[in-house]
Each structure stands twice: as structure tokens, then as C-alpha cells.
Length: 596
Image (tube, rainbow, N blue to C red; front, side, top):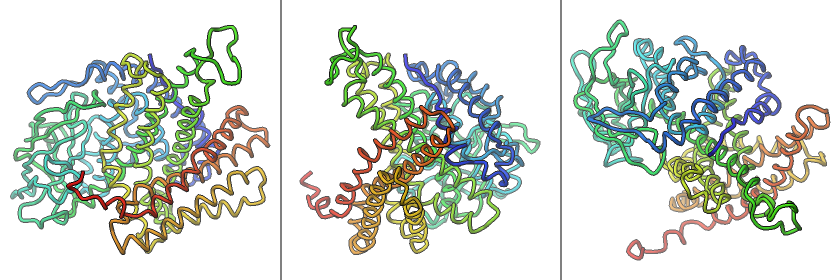
């Protein structure tokens, strides 16, 4: 049977030691987030996810959801677990206090999300999109809409969805057909079909608030004519009580490769009452508030599935006896050695470890940027944080989800044939992981967003600031003999990314296919350079703490060993990625379509 233990020690190291969250104590969201409070939240979240959510993971996958004439029933135990989640106030952890949230830092919300997904991905998705919908209504909704929906969404009593995809259009939302007909009372009648709607129907909450993209009758074609609407499953009366069922129904649920315990729904809108958010034909702007939130969340899903897969692969590798060590028996009293002695097994486990810990630092740092963008009193600092978030979002979503699949696959490989057998639990992790590179914008779309929009944004100022951040770290630490083994390769890798950036600027405009063919490689190059920066910086902090006699000595030494592995076995991939970027489109596009 698999197990899960929340990585609380690593999270505490990142928050207290590496990122030093107390330096932000003057910001509103950090004023009550003392070290003791942060630790208490992390520890309670660990108990909830380990003891309540995780035990339902395998059973929920095997049972799945059931659909009967529009009614969806979640697996056994999910309703009770969700009630505990609501009772604990977890949904509103980072929500604005004005509408019942606790106002805690976003970085704590990211930590909670990682634990929830790692313990039970399907369960976590029922509440996963509610936060993004809350943010969209908070930023773009009217005062009446905020008062009507946010308090119950903040508590988790009501959940929410994001409705974009239709049978004929996914990424290309300009083809959207769902229509909205204006009514005399200011509402709209929404008609159309949406597919692949995560948690679109279930029995966990008394209401589901759908955010739906639709085209007002007579609106312009393409994305310029799309509006965003609130369409509640159950109508809400003026006094806040629930009224009649709205004109939205679940036509079916999908039978999927993974995340069986989460209902992925076909939703039919038949003259459903909808309420416009913001202005007509400005729906994409409002929806992107939710989509960007969701994309960061999906990146965390890749990290989370890697973590739980790794934990179980390590357990198995320490326990499974097979073959002898190449350098002599390590278990001389037994018939064979545990497979963790074999270099190829170590290669897989160390690759996972270096990705997981580096990605967690990346994610936690992003949480700080989120908090700065929302709460910092200096407008310039807020803008700089927003720019960095915009630049990093496609990288986090794409790289972490691709690597989540690879990490789950490596973990399964450590099990050999047993990994392919259902009872061990590993094949579920690999199945579940595969959706993340697809939904919330495929990873190819993320790469094109990075290259086509984010690099040239604001005349390239955000990417210049990113380069300057890493360059400054290198320059400030030159002369530190203990860091030289990291600084020299990081400087070379940064140079490769800068050269690849220049190549794209010069060749992408001349032939847009050059940008399209190179975007995936460029994004991964940027991810590795960024992870290299975080690993070098974490190693520096670990060295300082060891020299001062602070912290857990074994933990800190292991952090340095893992940094060494990243720099010798993973960062060198940047050389190959630069070469692939600069190979351009010709070899990719040369073959006639008929020849495939």
C-alpha cells in the first residue's frame, strides 16, 4: 500500500530560512503569519491530508464517480472528507477577510494545494477552481455579485467551475458558440454545451457557481466578442437563500485515463439565467484572472504527484532485494542487496529529488511574488512582481507538469513489474499525472505564450529584470570558494539562455515558424536556468546555516548534495536545449504533410 507524508520540514526551511517570510511582516497578509502560526497551519494541513484525504485516494480511483440522470455521486467518504475541509476553514485560508477569508499569504495556499493534490488529486479538484473563480468575481464582479457569491465560496459551502471548452473548440476560443441573449431585467439567457468541465456536477456542495464564456447575440466574431457570466446551478434569492434549479444540467461524465474520483462533466445550458461579469465582450480579460491562477495551480499538481511518487519509490527501493552492488555486497547477510544501492536506481531517485526540491523553491518564491503583487504598498514593486508572475506562469505550468509525468514514470520504473500492478498504487499516479500537461492550456500553448507574448512584453523589460536577478546573484557571490562549483556552470547556462533569447528575437520575427519550433526547448531551457538559480541560492543558505551551527545538520547537508547532483546531471542539459532552439523550423517543417 502506498503512503504519503507531507514535506513539512522542507516547506518550513523554504519559508523561514530560505525566503525569510518575516521580512515581509509589514504587509497585511503577513502580519498574523508569524513563524508559529505558519508552522501550525502546515502541521494541521499535513494531518488533514495524510489522515483524511490520502486514505480515500486509491478507493476513490477504483470506485470513481457515478452519473444517473444528471446527478453525480462522488466516491464513498468524499462527502465526509469535504465537510471536514469546510469545517476547518481551509477554502478561505488566503481569501480576503472582507468576505470571510482568513487573509493569510498566498504562499501558504500554495503549500496547502501541494499537500491536497499529493494526497488525493481527484478530491482536491472539487475545491481547486473555487479560489480562481473567487478571484475573478473579486476583481471584475459588481458589489452585488461579490456580496451574493463570495461569502459562501470563501467558506467552501459553494464550489465553482470554469467553462471554456466546447465540443468543437478548445484552445481556439474564438470559435466559441455558446450564446447569451440579453433580457429586460439585465440578466442573460445562456444556451450551449460545454465539455471537460472539472467538478461540473457533484454532491459535495449545495450550489455550484459556474463561470461561463459565451457570446452575446450580435457580438463580434472571435475572442473580441466573448463575455463572461456567472451561472449558478441553483438560483440565489435576494435574501441569500437558495431558490429554483437553474437551466443547467450535467449530460454525462467522461470515462478518463486518470483522476477517476473527480467528475469531468458535459454541461448543457438551456436558457440558463446568467449574470454578466464586467463589460460585454471583455470576458477573456476577466477569465484570464482565473486561468492564470489555475495554471499556477496545475504546475503545483506536477510537483505534488512527483513528491508522492518519489516517497513510495524510495520506500520500495530500500525494501526490495535484488542483485548485488557493483562495488561489493551491502547486505552480506542476505541473498541480495536492496535496489537503492544500484547507480541507475539512484539516478532516477536523485533526478526526482532534485526536481522536486528545486520546483518547490520555485513555487514558494512565486507565492511571495503573488503576495507582493497584491499587497505591497509601492505601486512599482507591485508592477514588478506582476511582470515576474506573468513571465513565470507558462514556465511553471509547462515544465512542472512535464516533469511531474516523468517523475511518476521514473518512480514506477523503480518498482519494475510491480509498478505496473494496480495494488501498489504507482500506476494511478502515472495515469493521474498525464492530464496536467494538457488542461488549462496545453504545454505547447504555454511555450508559445512565453516566446510570443511574455518575452517581448513591455519591450522586454520583464525578461531583462529576470536576467539581472540571476546575474546579480552570480556577481555578488563571486569570490565565495564554496559557491564556485555552482556559479561557473550557472553563468554558462544563463549565457546560453541569453544567446537563445537573442536568436529567437532575430529569427522568430523573420520566420514565425522558428519561434513555434523552438518554443518548447526555450521554455525548458529557461526552467533549468531558473531552477539552477534557486539551487545555488539554497545551497548558499544551507552552507551559511551549517557554518553558524543552525538548523538540522543532516537536512542541510542533504540539500547541498542534491544541489551538486542538479548542477552536474541536470543543468548541463541547457547546452543541448540551446542547440535545439537554434536549429530552427526547417528540419521540423520540411516533411510534407502527406508524407506523415
